[in-house]
Image 1 (cartoon, helix red, strand yellow):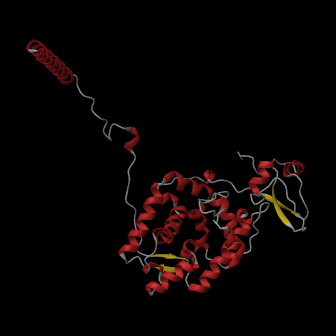
Image 2 (cartoon, helix red, strand yellow):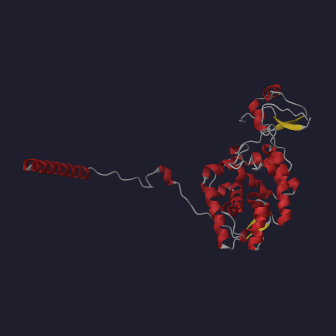
Image 3 (spheres, helix red, strand yellow):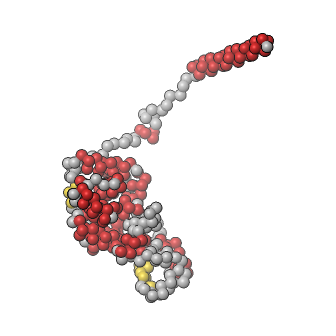
Length: 319
């Protein structure tokens, strides 16, 4: 028993001694090899010209002709947050800038004709990022993100074959109807914008609870509290991209797709054949008319629909 114990102690001592020698040797080798020095910002060509700046906050600001109280700290800081987030989320904001002319060419005349302030052309930017086919987790659809019930209430057709929430012109008119109804209710375009996010009832409830009808004085859920400030920030960046570091040449904007229109009042058995018959592809037809949801149109009622068709060469890249 004593012999076995001595051997065990000897073995443990031997292993401990060996381990100590290995550790000391490694430390010696490590200390004799110069460690790599991390590259400094001055040595790195990527960071040489890259700087992250704070952004200037204007003393005066307005939305749809209504004053934004920039003398309030919480107002300035809320605006500052959205300006920073959207300026330094470069890829997303740059894409909005590049898309802007194509979509504004459709939206601006409708807003003007409907008597809605031009500032609302930025609303689909924050609603859908100008993605025509986007569907939210809640089921809101299209540039203006209408839920099915709200779309129908504002005059849009929504069914399996035709969904006008995807129709840019008609959805814009429906959005104008909603915004004008909201303005008539609240007497404020700012609250009308907020209600586009929170709903008429949602804003009215907070006005009654908090006993103020000033958007900037209301304590709202985070999404609605940020909503108007996001609109303001996107408006400033998109309308003055160079001031925020976005260098965009005239040729960088996505081109406006020139189109003709065709009125149909009967069924279309196959839109692929229909497209070929008009000298275009099925994809081009659906890109211009995403509101046509099926490969066919029954149209048993004989309703008239206006279809957009590209002019010759409209999808060709211009030299």
